[in-house]
Image (cartoon, rainbow, N blue to C red):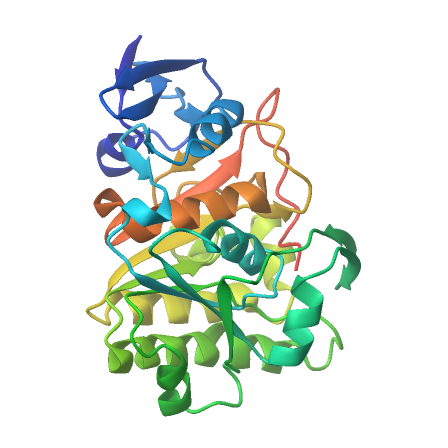
Length: 329
């Protein structure tokens, strides 16, 4: 068994099936490097032990390299100003929380209503999103500037104005399933046109890096997954995967430095397993805590190894990933 980089696996590994193997930890000067063990078996996996990750990430004076994929404190990152679009969403608020209050970093939360967002972010609450009831922790907004950003109603110029001076943009927007008769229109407006508007606005505002939260199986039609349970169930919500892939492709052709993060089924509870990072169009099942998704998004802002990459991520579970049960909106 040898230690290799998860990033090398993303770039060069032929295997598309993953299973959990034990982690190895290696310390380097000024940096704690969390290495994933890799077997020569095509069924081998690369995963990061979550406890090691969070212990290392908690040390504010060091950077953490996840098998070559750096998770750095934001004050060590190149960005000086980051905008999080969809900052009150379940994933967006977790990203905002991780960035907020970081020395040397200006953080903007893009929201539809500043007043409502201020109240919502500052208190613990229980929210109903689609068919899910989720516990929501409060976010310290004292070091965050909330700005109006409505991807459906605002023009590109208005969205660009909210990004003025930003180096990086994290797109954590997504439509919330509701009226079945209106879901298709909503998915088209938010996950397709709205995301494209954000990309155009980022270019206009001079943003250099865009991190987009998408979903595994977004490109399922093009790699034989159109009839898979995960694709069928998820895309039943307004054809959301078909809308997301259009926005993904638009971002990839935009000329901006991008990282597209494709998580499996999203869980509100804290992670109970390690992080599995796979190459593009390789995962058709699995779930993951939103906490881990937020960690990967924050890492992708500053790590050059994530530049112009698609990262598919799920959470390791004993006996392998569960059957994908669609996006939890």
